[in-house]
Image (cartoon, rainbow, N blue to C red; front, side, top):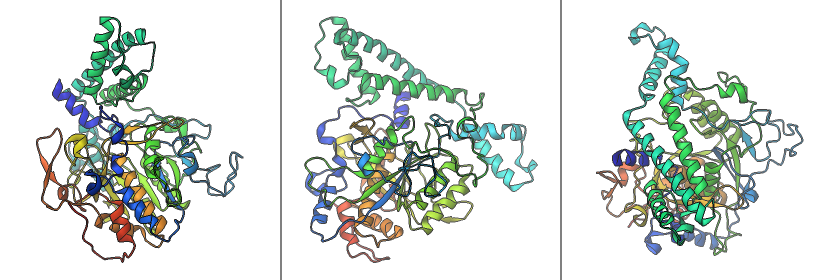
Length: 552
């Protein structure tokens, strides 16, 4: 069972943060290797550089394509993009862009009646059932004459293979179900004596139970959440809710081959999905029903300084545009394509995309949108993914390479997640996808602290989803202070200014895996993004110029 659970952790690490978190780790990703011996992005040093420049930042809009942003979060609210051409909540499309009352962005997962898509099936399930009646009796692809249908058949066969719920999947599900049931029983015992229905690990560590049963329950609870990798600040009710959500998703996966997914688009969104020209759907609720992931990402894009920083006059003039396109499940290609175009048409110069999937049946729509963004000088920053895939041989989407256009987009930066020795004993993580043909740079993505709903809440998440917006902030800083830099200039600056080890062939252990890798194997840039280096390079940057990067 332990082996199965370790696999579960590797797959689901994106959703749970490690235990044993302390205050010193809150903003480790901002730190500097020379000064702090921590492999952060040298953000403090970057602001020191800005203080010496006689420059004022120009406004820069960063679109966050995600699952929703808490627009009432105290720290994010003043940093939201405001569409000044739109009169809020008057029910009129004042700026005539086709989207009514899009004051802070747009929700492509909503209905005109105000309802929202929350959970969606994974793409392989949608593909499998869409083509099942057409291809289930085909034994030889040569029976299919149309080249288009042959490609569809190949995709369907791959989906059919991957939709299988393996014995290992079943064992993982059983283990987590047992752990969740145990935690609920232990929690009920603790609540009776502690009289706190939403306790945290931090609050019960100092709790001294009177009864032996409660003491045993406390110790068992602490051991279980530590094994599960749940952060100490997570309230009990949230722990149980997250685990139940995971179980629900896996139970659906177990039935995915026999039960077709519900057509939630037809019920809520009501667009003609097969027609990319049918694009004026959705609503203006950019928060949606589950904004935890997107709010965390938006906070990292903003990189809100702590109270010890006196940098308000230096802070990049970042405006965050919310574009809701990612449900709990796989995103739809049409929403991604239209979300990119919406962001571009409404002034975004950087688009953060912290999502991805293994199937993209309408890839051509997304490919066209990415290249449209390139034509409009918009930089797209995309997370590499959390499956520990080698992207040199395994495709995930969106992808810089288009199999339909037959070229590679130059305005995409693909980000892997780095770590630090004080967190997990390595610069690498055991979840980040890698591959020097697709991935460009590394960025901190392990145990990252940022905004979460509601009020003024903060918490830890991890994954390449966190690594990407950290890069988006640096890119926004560059474009805010050096507005003449193009999207491709910024990409090259970020790749050329990475921190690298002195020994380029130095290997680092991959935690929980019996292997080591060099940073060259992870990313084309062979290093970790560095804000101070990037700013220094940007001052006199000329396209095509190469520079030595800082290494230790």
